[in-house]
Image (cartoon, rainbow, N blue to C red; front, side, top):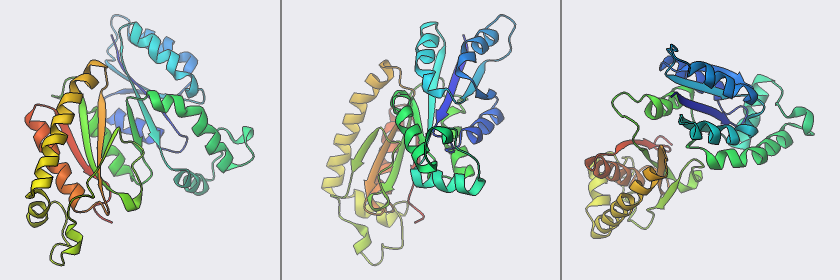
Length: 282
């Protein structure tokens, strides 16, 4: 049976860029594929003698019709994952203004903003069903590549649940691609310590300030226990990717230290965990 990745998401959010990265990883990629041809392509690559083991299909205009296809392919025994690429409305408007391209729904709306709003509403069920959502609003091409490499370059990882634990700053907005969000603003803030302010949660002095407190230790013990109780259930339900976001005010001190500690603890239990820090350089 084929290993199939269906790539969908908002127009302008980076589907073609994602396809290029996956092609470099050895996936057989077909871009802008009409949904009606998904079954035909999968049937062809599944025939005896085919040397295509990993197939990535970038959905075209009809990607709102993907969900029945996903269900049917999984029922037939294929491993199917759905990747949804998203971005803020503001970012999408800027990208279309820069490229001067027409939005696919341009003829069904009175302008670019209305077309983006319409597409977002149409794709909400697809986004909700996605195995992995990546928000490309603040990502450059290299950062997007890094996320895709972590998620789909599976050498040595098998098919286990892959976990991303990422820090962020609440003053910069909530991450829209997180499955679980945890707020650590209750911990004392190193920002108010003059010697610690220019440092980050990667620095030992900040790490010790944040983590060597009873309230931090108790929180991490409880959070670790919660995660260990939830992760097997996510795996049973067939979830391939889980994004856990940990936030503090600016995303540079407390959340960074907590993310690295939580990731280390989960790795000790055998889970594949990668870390990311969205607002560390702000």
